[in-house]
Image (tube, rainbow, N blue to C red; front, top):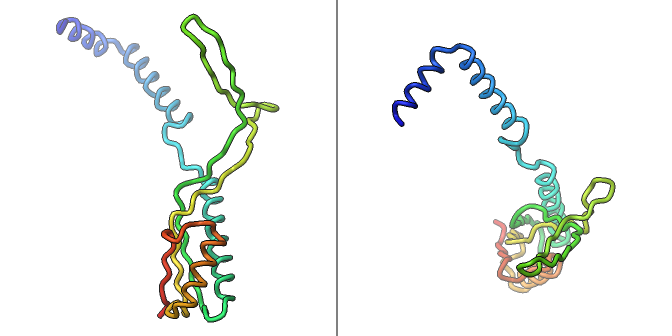
Length: 164
């Protein structure tokens, strides 16, 4: 077995045509990997949508909270879980086989494009509110209740601190 390997490599080393052929194959493999997603860049459009969504929420919440009596200047930071989630329209096909039933789900296509039912924005995992008036317990409670209502999140995801 070892002798066959040695003979094979000796043939490659002595035959220039085989060497050129192997080099061409290697270049083709590298080109295919590079062209068809071997090194994919992150989906910048989806990331931009999430950043825009979070920035919009932060500025709207800051603006709204600052209008509450006693709150004063406000800064808001919102953390989210992950990127956008796309829900596709799916077609379910149930087939009877000799071993039982087989269920296959495939996306519905219209004019060659998948049908998107909805896009879900990422789940909010935490909110930090820094406000001038947060050292007053009544104001802090107002900020807390407003944040829970506006973002539809639990109190344990909200941290409110007093601004210096």
